[in-house]
Image 1 (spheres, rainbow, N blue to C red):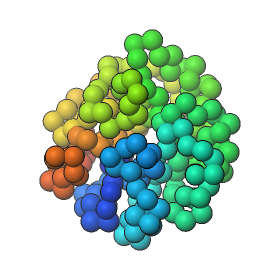
Image 2: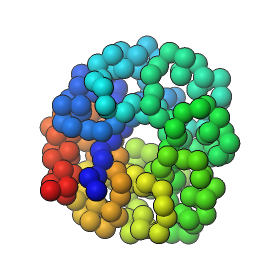
Image 3: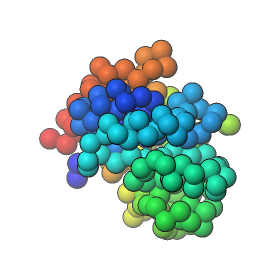
Image 4: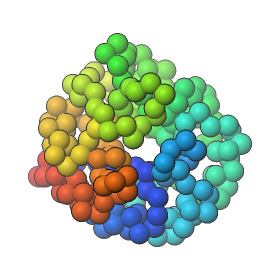
Length: 206
């Protein structure tokens, strides 16, 4: 199975176009106000206009108020919602959109139990656990934990970059990979790093 690619934390239309041209399957639009990659609705709409068909646009949230998500959905095209906080399964499913539930993995995380709990999720995104941080940390976890015997599509995140993504895929065998800080230079998305990351993922698919 081909490993899918998501570039998260896209902040401008130009970088969205670079990512699409590099062959990504999805881009992540960050609606978490505490993130340096946070987007306003107007910024997200501008990115919407540049993204071509068949590239999924994913809205990323952390413990949002329901009215916040509703207001964004009324203005911004999103194919999936991605929840990174402590959102309940009922809450995640309440918007009538396919959703991905992010799990911050520790050595004691019971992924089978969480898969059962979030049985309506389109997939689980496995990320590193850093206290008070919700993604984009540049830190990895033990990738072998992704091989837990579940049925949900698994998206691997946390500390990935062009240099380690092939090893990560070999160990975890994920449905997809998700990268943010690993394709940045000085906290800005770097087109060269995006291209190299995508090339290295695709080499695993050959």
